Length: 92
Image 1: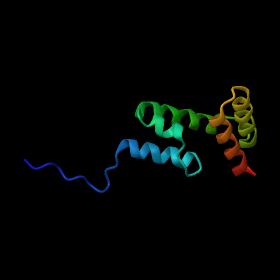
Image 2 (image 1 turned 180 degrees about the vertical axis):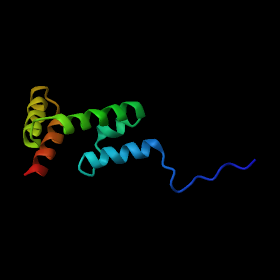
Image 3 (image 1 turned 90 degrees about the vertical axis):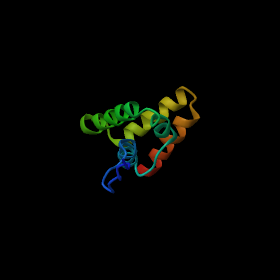
Image 4 (image 1 turned 135 degrees about the vertical axis):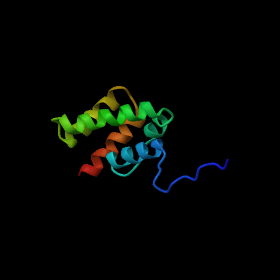
C-alpha cells in the first residue's frame, strides 16, 4: 500500500506553533523559543501565557520591557538583558 500523499494544506503542528510564536514576538524566534520547541506542549504553554498577558495584562509594553531589563540586571542574566534591551529599542 503506498504512503499517503501529504496535502499542501497539512501543516506540522510544531511549525504552526512556531509561526504563532514568531508573530507574537515581532517576527523573530529567540533561542528560548527554539529550546521550547523541543516540547510542543511546553511551547504551547508559553504561547498561552503570552496570550494571557497580552489579552488581560494592564502594563504597557514599555513598562514590561523595563521590568524585564530590571530583572535581567538583578539576576545578572546577559541573555535576558539583551532581549529586554532589544524589546525596548523596538518600542522607541
